[in-house]
Amino acid sequence: MSPLKTLRLSLLLLIIPLGHAEEPGRTGDLFRESFDDALIDQRGWYDGKEVRIVPNGKSGSCIEYEWTDASDTVTGSSAKRHLFEPTDEIFIRYYLRLSKGWGWSGRSYHPHLTHFMTTENSKWHGPAASHLTLYIEPVNGKLRLAAQDIQNKDMPHGLTQGPLRGGYNGQMFDSADELFTDDAWHCIEAQFKLNTLDLKNDKPNADGIVRGWFDGKLVIAHTDVILRSTDFPNMKFNQFLMAPYFGPGLLPHAQKLWIDEMVVGKKRMGPLEPEAKAP
Image (spheres, rainbow, N blue to C red):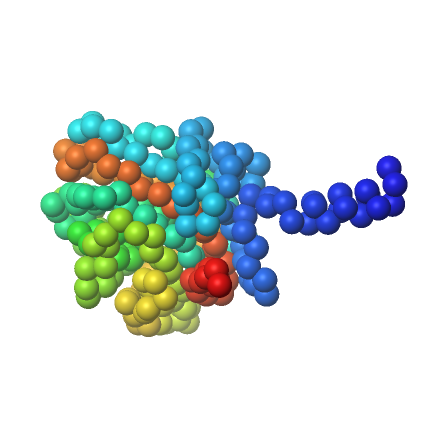
């Protein structure tokens, strides 16, 4: 191959997308995914086998989840997980689009959507009853960040996310306003930071952080949260779980959602830069 052809090939390889869209100047990312193809397991994802990639994402292609009937079971794509370097503070950003005429469950809970879990559970542990599961999801039009720790009911210091009610517990942090009111792409961001611990006095400090942004605007802000007790001095976030789910009998009708341009990291990412308009 001639030197000129080699140079052209090298330049071409530099501009071919390799599963994600680059954002220049970013540091602190733990993983990122733009869902440009279905080979996401090659980029660290695991668990369910089905991945449906469709065009017309926020940027290029995106992943699609679909409910086709009243069985409540999501189709198209499966629940997927991704491990990352353990950390006591985590940020996420992704773009979410709900289909036209999207319907809610009619209850104060569901659908579930995306989650963080911790080093205190295995890479296969379910989100519904863990030592700590965090939730980032739209509920009745609002952005909800939440936490539950049902598995701690028999731990020495017990539950930190409220008492059990019907077998479940949870601490909910909702936006004041309904935000999901159309079928457009919206930028969802969340920050969680574990509270510190007063090990000398065997108690947690109320200094954990929960923040949420919608299209770049801060809509949830709490800096006095307890997410763990002294039962878990070594707890860190290390797993992301994407698992859209309506409980039995709660799906209002057939509908879809799409997710795109996801980044998980140790710093806030912010929305993508607006695309330049043609002159």
